[in-house]
Length: 123
Image (cartoon, rainbow, N blue to C red):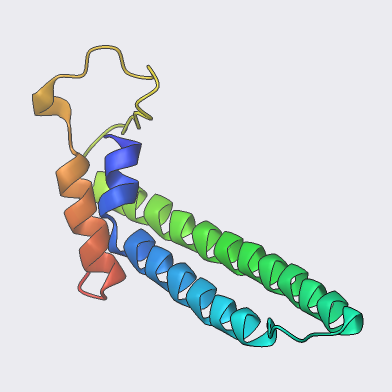
């Protein structure tokens, strides 16, 4: 199973990316509104504090969502392995973890379909 392909096709990650982009766009808009041409030094300090607060919030939320998604993925992979009678599933990161995987042994598509169904509440 190829981890990069799994991460790029799992709907949970796709939705997370969309959420993060939307939040970033909303926060950028708020900050842009605050950046009027005639702002005082205290306003600049407040804006910088707001930027730091937003960045911290983004990192915490993104990290929390990512951990939750990986928990779902790992539980789903385990359930999928049990359902299909696999003894083990090896994840390939694309960085040389699997040297010569046979195409017949690649179950990435099966796992992606399964975890997407489970994510959507269909399993």
